[in-house]
Amino acid sequence: MSGAYVSFNDFMSLPVVFYHTIGVNPYESATNTATRSHWLLAIFIFHVVNLNCMCGLEIAFVYMSFRDSENFVESCMVMGYIAFVVVGELKMITVWWQKSKLNALMREMELIFPSASAEDQRRYQVERYLQRCRVFTKGFTCLYLLLIATYNLYMLVQFFIQRVFLDMPNAQLVMPYTPVSPWSLENGLGYGVMYILQALAGYCATAGHASSDILIYAVVIQDIMHYDFLSRELVNLQIQTGRVSDGSDKDLKLLRKLISYHNKLLG
Image (cartoon, rainbow, N blue to C red):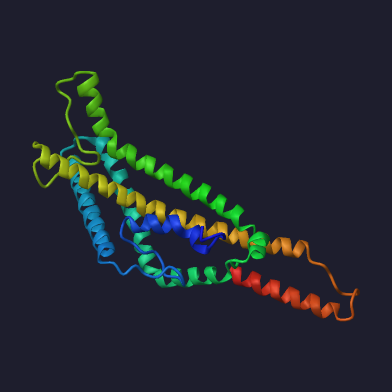
């Protein structure tokens, strides 16, 4: 929270941080300008190149498996990984491709966000919607992180259990996503580097999915906050027509204001 009040960036902080971990600045607003960092660009380039290289290795594995009529079940699993990577990349590409529209949307939302006054914060019940936003975004993010941690660490945990607890001398270290590698995996260094690269590619694809989804959550919950406020204003509207001399003019002025506000929300 920004000081003693809730700000627009409090709603958007988790999606922005999650995007930054893969080198993406999702939007620019009045208070969230583009991060002019060579490190951020370097992180993005590394993740994209690594993700596409690992995806290429997975495609090569599927091709060789079908060519040799082997590993059918494992090939089907790897095809699932490929689809996951493609969708994650498409989500990241969409953010870049539509960034101007996303910037305009975020600036509009920031402009209509309740002011820092205690009265506005109370009328919009901002704290309540921020808590709701955090429950959804953090819960959703934790599920995605648990998913990728399971996939990334499963093979290592399996090997550890087989070797230490079950004392299986023939236990083998295998890759989390594809056994195809441009270098030998027989030595510890080659295996470790490839395992880390595949794990990072898995995280990048997962972040591509999760960051866009929690960004949508944060935006939608703010929309709900505005619509709920609008509905309360309409329900509590005190009709002045017939009570005071210029009551109808006052009613029309207030209604025009609420209609304009509603049209802005629809936009």
